[in-house]
Length: 132
Image 1 (cartoon, rainbow, N blue to C red):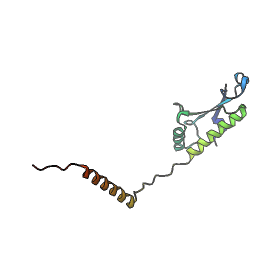
Image 2 (tube, helix red, strand yellow):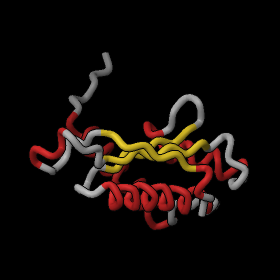
Image 3 (cartoon, helix red, strand yellow):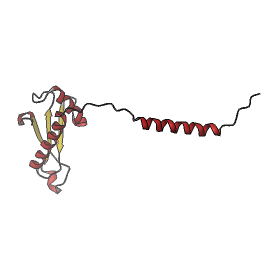
Image 4 (cartoon, rainbow, N blue to C red):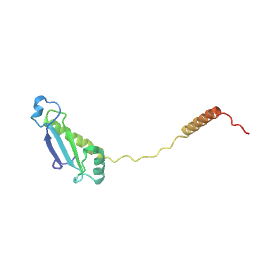
């Protein structure tokens, strides 16, 4: 969990549900987390987090999450924190090493048999060449 002092919350006008009140209240929450300046994360986790964040990551190395699902500012704030936590959990776990697989022998033989059949079918379609 990232300490509260590393997170910046700002409230903005929401485009979601809320009727006429949506024009007067700022219920959407924008959460900013400075990944590059955070002492809480390892360098590998920072790199994975920025890669996972995709378009939510800025050029300055910040992750910006906008939550506007709810009409309540408090619930949107919790939703933004939850989404950041899910991203952090994904970034914290190193990816499993890739183990190269080998094609089974039976599949290789099946493929070669199919190639032979295809070759034979096409060979029999050809007109015989005349030796003159």
